[in-house]
Image (cartoon, rainbow, N blue to C red; front, side):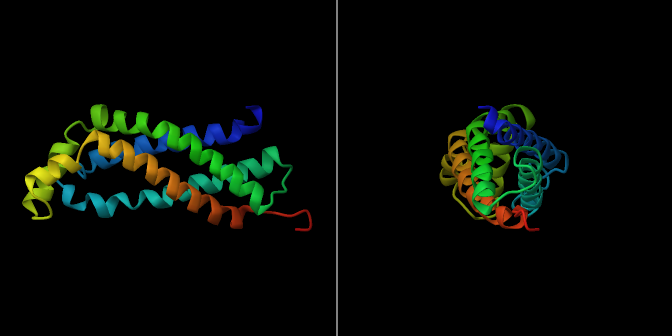
Length: 161
């Protein structure tokens, strides 16, 4: 477990930052009065997520691998960060939708119906905590794998450099 201390730390940091972002989204009205902007504005978090992975892999390289890290080592480290994020994602989604923004599902369902994107039945069955728990875990896994692979390219460092 000590070998994964850095990855566990950054998985918790990622989750904490994501919860802070959810609070920010709510404060900006993207979960309520400006819900029409939610999908677009939420994409900003991708930049923050990538930055966290960069910082995590740089931390791993500097403090655990004596300043030298192959792509493979970086990718594996990123995968472990991803595992921690995936494990914590149900907790984060639950906290988001019960504490930070308990009206989100009602608001997004209303918006989807009013904008003609879904029927009321479709919206009510799609926008649920159960669906979001699944989407969060699957999304975190897929995006974490891709981010780890790409960030590992830019954070690798050989002994010759």
